[in-house]
Length: 223
Ligand code: URA
Ligand code: SF4
Image 1 (cartoon, rainbow, N blue to C red):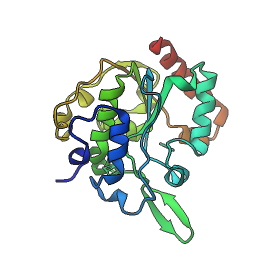
Image 2: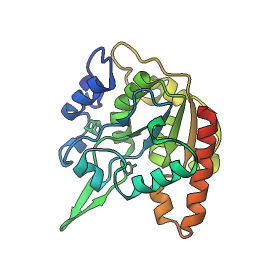
Image 3: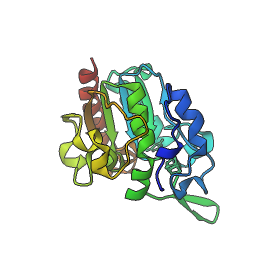
């Protein structure tokens, strides 16, 4: 069967248990061309979990999430919003880099719904172990993973949302529940734009300030 759940160890008790198992995942085809799996990173007691799309080119090479240009921008925004880096755990909806090779260059490809669904058990397992207070949805791919396909980040960004049904009930999302079940934390969720969208914006200052405003909502909610 497709999907990551059969690669998640039965009774994983820690993020390290998950992280050790993740390189063996064959839940979709993306493992084949990527350099390595890029698992989430941060303190196990983090109150804030930020969910991006997938590792980029640099993350794929280094093996850590948000260590490229988008990550640098995100850290600046986190800082401007008054959030301390040790308070956050960073992860992605999809844990292998999806790209096409064009000569020497590897061009980012947005993951498809099938990749998001396949990889979701890792994300849900991270939540189950982290039990965060606030989950920050960075951009459309993370929104698809947690809020369903009809959610529009541009329209509902910066709002404090209750933990969504789509994330509460994996069956609704056509993802088999993880062995042993997952307790979903009573977290709040805030969606905002992806830091890469700030880098691509015509008015980068405006876009950056918008991201910071949303992260200030996150900071207040986590307190
Ligand atoms: N963009 C993401 O969504 N995640 C990363 O880890 C890096 C860039
Ligand atoms: Fe497994 Fe996710 Fe990698 Fe696909 S992208 S192989 S589901 S870890």
